[in-house]
Picture (tube, rainbow, N blue to C red):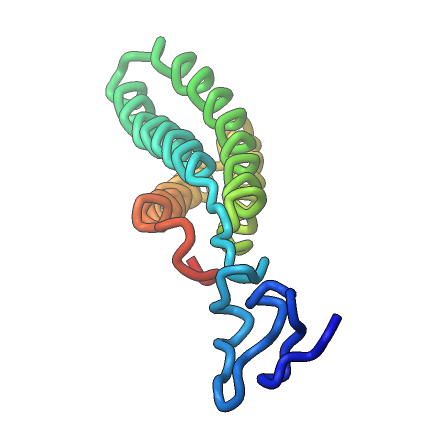
Length: 168
């Protein structure tokens, strides 16, 4: 191929010729033909899953002190319901861990909610043990802490907007 006087190749497409003399190209990140310019697809369904699971977990946690209070008031049958609800809470807590992993990957969210969810799940295991052992001096304060931590995770999940940075 022959060279043109403007420095490009004769017969070559204009994009392949390069910039004209005195003209500059935009940075690669803003060029249309650059793969870096393609928007990264952010999946929103993982945060929706986390919101659903975290809401269920939170509501189940709020039911526990009501059931315990009604048991203390004299309705002894509610202790069985308190126990059954704790079993559902235990299972839900591990689904919450899975949901936070999905928010991280493939949802491109922050990593720290996984740690919070894992700590909540292990605290639930401790809570169950202290409840069966009738260690109420540990069982009741941990229940309050669980509700507070669950509230924080739930609040974050509803405030998180996928695709707006890595910090969450």
